[in-house]
Length: 82
Image 1 (cartoon, rainbow, N blue to C red):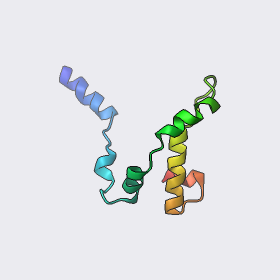
Image 2 (image 1 turned 30 degrees about the horizontal axis):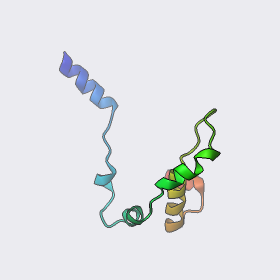
Image 3 (image 1 turned 45 degrees about the vertical axis):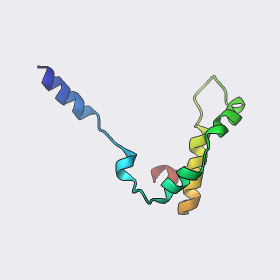
């Protein structure tokens, strides 16, 4: 009976690893190696409110803008789709 549950539960989730899907020589890996955006989160923390809906992570936003610039994606909606 336990095996049936594990099989059914495994069907609800999927495993996805970026390491398996992004080639080692991809442009994004080069950018990630040289760009450290961790201090930005600390620097901008005072501008984000603790109440209300959580904001977009500033590090993620800047990374997305870099990707959009590198790949010539001008639309934020298209950037999210890509």
